[in-house]
Image (cartoon, rainbow, N blue to C red; front, side):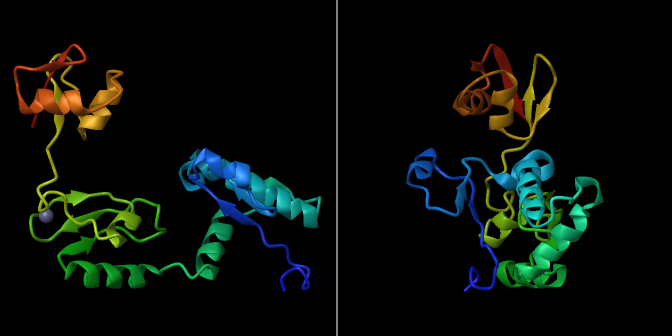
Length: 191
Ligand SMILES: [Zn+2]
Protein backbone atom coordinates (compact mmCIF):
# COMPACT_ATOMS: atom_id res chain seq x y z
CA UNK A 1 0.00 0.00 0.00
CA UNK A 2 2.83 2.33 0.82
CA UNK A 3 4.41 1.68 -2.57
CA UNK A 4 1.13 2.40 -4.37
CA UNK A 5 0.89 5.68 -2.50
CA UNK A 6 4.43 6.53 -3.58
CA UNK A 7 5.84 6.02 -0.09
CA UNK A 8 8.92 3.86 0.33
CA UNK A 9 9.17 2.04 3.62
CA UNK A 10 12.70 1.59 4.91
CA UNK A 11 13.19 -0.95 7.68
CA UNK A 12 16.31 -0.74 9.81
CA UNK A 13 17.49 -3.46 12.17
CA UNK A 14 20.36 -2.72 14.52
CA UNK A 15 22.32 -4.68 17.14
CA UNK A 16 22.05 -7.67 14.77
CA UNK A 17 24.27 -10.73 14.91
CA UNK A 18 26.59 -10.45 11.87
CA UNK A 19 25.04 -13.62 10.41
CA UNK A 20 21.77 -11.79 9.73
CA UNK A 21 23.42 -9.70 7.03
CA UNK A 22 23.86 -12.83 4.91
CA UNK A 23 20.13 -13.51 4.90
CA UNK A 24 19.13 -9.87 4.51
CA UNK A 25 15.87 -9.07 2.77
CA UNK A 26 15.53 -6.38 0.10
CA UNK A 27 14.57 -3.00 1.47
CA UNK A 28 15.89 -3.79 4.94
CA UNK A 29 19.10 -2.48 6.41
CA UNK A 30 21.07 -4.40 8.98
CA UNK A 31 23.64 -3.05 11.42
CA UNK A 32 25.58 -5.04 13.97
CA UNK A 33 25.89 -2.12 16.40
CA UNK A 34 23.35 -0.03 18.30
CA UNK A 35 22.52 2.92 16.04
CA UNK A 36 21.06 4.97 18.86
CA UNK A 37 24.25 4.58 20.93
CA UNK A 38 26.45 5.89 18.14
CA UNK A 39 27.90 9.36 18.86
CA UNK A 40 25.76 12.10 17.29
CA UNK A 41 23.57 9.38 15.70
CA UNK A 42 25.86 9.70 12.66
CA UNK A 43 24.54 6.70 10.71
CA UNK A 44 20.87 7.50 11.31
CA UNK A 45 21.46 11.09 10.23
CA UNK A 46 23.30 10.14 7.06
CA UNK A 47 20.53 7.66 6.17
CA UNK A 48 17.84 10.31 6.69
CA UNK A 49 19.79 12.83 4.67
CA UNK A 50 20.27 10.33 1.83
CA UNK A 51 16.55 9.59 1.69
CA UNK A 52 15.69 13.28 1.89
CA UNK A 53 18.04 13.95 -1.03
CA UNK A 54 16.28 11.24 -3.07
CA UNK A 55 13.25 13.50 -2.85
CA UNK A 56 15.04 16.84 -3.12
CA UNK A 57 18.76 16.85 -4.02
CA UNK A 58 19.07 20.39 -2.66
CA UNK A 59 18.46 19.35 0.95
CA UNK A 60 21.19 20.84 3.10
CA UNK A 61 22.36 19.28 6.33
CA UNK A 62 22.84 22.66 7.98
CA UNK A 63 19.21 23.66 7.59
CA UNK A 64 17.77 20.43 8.90
CA UNK A 65 16.54 20.78 12.43
CA UNK A 66 17.57 17.43 13.84
CA UNK A 67 16.01 18.11 17.21
CA UNK A 68 12.72 18.83 15.51
CA UNK A 69 12.99 15.65 13.46
CA UNK A 70 13.69 13.58 16.57
CA UNK A 71 10.79 15.15 18.42
CA UNK A 72 8.31 14.60 15.59
CA UNK A 73 9.61 11.05 14.99
CA UNK A 74 9.10 10.24 18.67
CA UNK A 75 5.56 11.65 18.58
CA UNK A 76 4.61 9.80 15.41
CA UNK A 77 6.09 6.50 16.53
CA UNK A 78 3.72 6.53 19.49
CA UNK A 79 6.57 7.03 21.96
CA UNK A 80 5.65 7.76 25.55
CA UNK A 81 5.23 11.30 26.81
CA UNK A 82 6.94 12.25 30.07
CA UNK A 83 3.67 11.93 32.00
CA UNK A 84 2.90 8.54 30.45
CA UNK A 85 6.39 7.34 31.36
CA UNK A 86 6.05 8.52 34.97
CA UNK A 87 2.68 6.77 35.15
CA UNK A 88 4.14 3.54 33.83
CA UNK A 89 7.02 3.61 36.35
CA UNK A 90 4.57 4.26 39.18
CA UNK A 91 2.51 1.22 38.15
CA UNK A 92 5.56 -1.01 37.65
CA UNK A 93 7.28 -0.24 40.94
CA UNK A 94 4.32 0.61 43.13
CA UNK A 95 5.42 4.22 43.55
CA UNK A 96 8.83 3.30 45.04
CA UNK A 97 10.83 4.90 42.22
CA UNK A 98 10.74 8.63 41.66
CA UNK A 99 11.51 9.99 38.19
CA UNK A 100 13.75 13.04 38.73
CA UNK A 101 14.60 14.09 35.15
CA UNK A 102 12.34 14.78 32.24
CA UNK A 103 11.77 11.66 30.14
CA UNK A 104 13.15 11.99 26.57
CA UNK A 105 13.40 8.52 25.01
CA UNK A 106 13.80 4.87 25.92
CA UNK A 107 17.55 4.95 25.34
CA UNK A 108 18.30 8.36 26.83
CA UNK A 109 19.52 7.98 30.41
CA UNK A 110 17.30 9.51 33.05
CA UNK A 111 17.85 10.34 36.74
CA UNK A 112 15.66 8.33 39.08
CA UNK A 113 15.62 7.84 42.84
CA UNK A 114 14.57 4.95 45.03
CA UNK A 115 12.14 6.20 47.68
CA UNK A 116 12.87 3.16 49.84
CA UNK A 117 16.65 3.58 50.27
CA UNK A 118 17.36 6.99 48.73
CA UNK A 119 19.80 5.63 46.13
CA UNK A 120 19.79 7.71 42.90
CA UNK A 121 21.05 6.47 39.55
CA UNK A 122 20.81 7.14 35.81
CA UNK A 123 19.48 4.10 33.97
CA UNK A 124 18.22 3.91 30.44
CA UNK A 125 14.41 4.04 30.75
CA UNK A 126 14.32 0.86 28.69
CA UNK A 127 15.83 -1.11 31.59
CA UNK A 128 13.29 0.29 34.06
CA UNK A 129 10.43 -0.65 31.77
CA UNK A 130 11.84 -4.18 31.69
CA UNK A 131 11.37 -4.22 35.45
CA UNK A 132 14.94 -3.60 36.65
CA UNK A 133 14.50 -1.43 39.72
CA UNK A 134 16.80 -0.24 42.49
CA UNK A 135 20.06 -2.21 42.53
CA UNK A 136 20.76 -1.33 46.13
CA UNK A 137 17.45 -2.71 47.38
CA UNK A 138 17.89 -5.79 45.19
CA UNK A 139 21.30 -6.41 46.78
CA UNK A 140 23.04 -6.05 43.41
CA UNK A 141 24.81 -2.79 44.11
CA UNK A 142 28.35 -3.63 45.10
CA UNK A 143 29.67 -0.13 45.85
CA UNK A 144 32.49 1.82 44.24
CA UNK A 145 35.52 -0.16 43.05
CA UNK A 146 38.77 1.53 44.12
CA UNK A 147 42.27 0.79 42.86
CA UNK A 148 44.61 1.08 45.86
CA UNK A 149 47.70 1.93 43.79
CA UNK A 150 46.20 4.72 41.67
CA UNK A 151 43.37 5.78 43.99
CA UNK A 152 41.04 5.83 40.97
CA UNK A 153 37.37 4.92 41.42
CA UNK A 154 35.17 2.90 39.11
CA UNK A 155 31.42 2.40 39.04
CA UNK A 156 31.66 -1.36 38.66
CA UNK A 157 34.02 -4.31 38.17
CA UNK A 158 33.70 -4.17 34.40
CA UNK A 159 34.84 -0.54 34.13
CA UNK A 160 37.78 -1.21 36.44
CA UNK A 161 38.77 -4.21 34.31
CA UNK A 162 38.58 -2.16 31.12
CA UNK A 163 40.71 0.60 32.63
CA UNK A 164 43.62 -1.75 33.32
CA UNK A 165 43.26 -3.76 30.12
CA UNK A 166 41.76 -6.94 31.56
CA UNK A 167 39.35 -8.87 29.39
CA UNK A 168 36.97 -10.08 32.08
CA UNK A 169 35.85 -8.51 35.33
CA UNK A 170 35.89 -11.74 37.41
CA UNK A 171 39.47 -11.13 38.59
CA UNK A 172 38.65 -7.68 39.94
CA UNK A 173 35.51 -8.97 41.66
CA UNK A 174 37.56 -11.72 43.26
CA UNK A 175 40.22 -9.23 44.36
CA UNK A 176 37.60 -6.97 45.95
CA UNK A 177 35.86 -9.75 47.77
CA UNK A 178 39.09 -11.37 48.97
CA UNK A 179 41.41 -8.48 49.88
CA UNK A 180 44.59 -10.55 49.62
CA UNK A 181 44.09 -11.13 45.91
CA UNK A 182 45.41 -8.79 43.27
CA UNK A 183 44.21 -8.51 39.70
CA UNK A 184 45.95 -7.04 36.66
CA UNK A 185 48.93 -6.11 38.86
CA UNK A 186 46.84 -3.90 41.21
CA UNK A 187 45.08 -4.20 44.54
CA UNK A 188 41.36 -3.49 44.65
CA UNK A 189 38.72 -2.83 47.25
CA UNK A 190 35.10 -1.75 47.50
CA UNK A 191 33.99 1.43 49.10
ZN1 LIG B 1 16.58 1.23 46.87
